[in-house]
Amino acid sequence: MIRVNLLPREEKNQRKPIQIDLKLGDMVLPGVIMAAAALIVAGSALSQRTRQGGLEKSIEQVDAESRALAPQIARVNQLAQERAELDLRMGIITKLEKGRTQSVRLMDELARCVPDHLWLSGVSQDASNRLQLEGVTYSNLVVSDFMSRIERSPMFSNVELAVAERGQVTDKSVVKFSLSCSVNPDQGAN
Image (cartoon, rainbow, N blue to C red):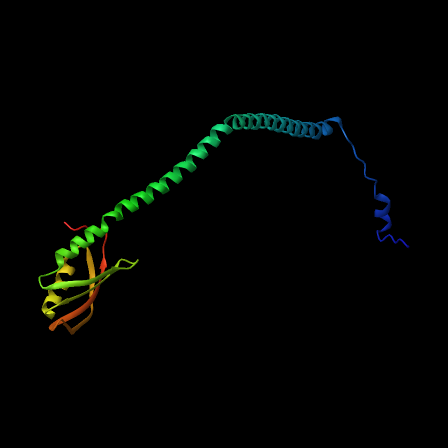
């Protein structure tokens, strides 16, 4: 490798080597800063270790308390489960108690709605609280009166006539009808 010095000769000779003049005062300030930083790091580490020790002791105390309270906690959980089962049973009993008199109230209200000269030959109720009624009477006006009475009752709603046709019952001319309505079990007959 070839080196070429492009500086003029006068400048080449005037170039002086770099000399570092270090004094004791120049080294003190960086040393103090380094020592302060080391003290801060050491203090922080010591603080963290002390804090960690305190947290470990706290965790040990909580674990000990938890182990001491474990039987009581298990008993409380057992009682909560027993209470939930009891509430479920009570709900079923309440539902059965509520529905116990529904059929009686339903038949009572239906009997109040039946006008004179109308006979029911069949009554059935499905799971969706829809009531199917079949019967006979002498006139379409009596069927209309029966439907009006059912509609006015708070226990029934959505009355629909399915069939109303002429027929014979032991040499008498009658109207055979079939109608349906919804039952509102929460609405009691007064």
